[in-house]
Amino acid sequence: MSDFCPSIWPEEPAPGTERNCNDCGLAEHGTRIIWGEGNPQAPIMVLLDNPGAREDRSGSPFVCGTRHTLQETVDSVGLEMDDLYVTYVLKRKPTRAYDKPRTRVICMRHLDQQLEKHKPDYIVCLGNVAAQSFFEDEEVQVKTLRGECHEVRGIKTTAAYHPLAVRRRPNLLRLFKEDWQYVADQFFRSRST
Ligand code: SF4
Image (spheres, helix red, strand yellow):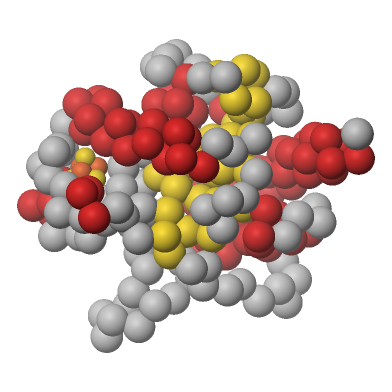
């Protein structure tokens, strides 16, 4: 890829009432809540499965590969960092085995709160977990959802591959860029009308 330089997006803190949430039991995995990052008022909400690594062993923040690939691709299609807000199906990073379907259903109430508060114009689900959780359909797949707009929960929604999958399988990068070009085209078209 290019010499693009990723940046650490500002984190939106969890609301006070949710800061110590342990509704699903993931707090016992020892990871903190990441509520969201980027611009909370952004028109495009990006949904990932869960937060990745954010701090190294010494506690210094860094941009993980997922966010690097996402930021670089978004930049390449002309979107600004300010156009995006990133959040997660699970607000904590799991570190060991857990009951995935149950945990996702429990934590989705937080996403509902965010949708109510931020009212994004678009949702982009990255990866099958995010797509299946948001569409509330275990059968949907990115490969059949991508490149099209779907009305879900009253919001224009599309899907793209997970940036981590793109990093592992470089042949997906072209498709990932196509998907973000599609998002950018929709976004700029709506701005010009
Ligand atoms: S993942 Fe969600 S439901 Fe589970 S403890 Fe964290 S915020 Fe609460």
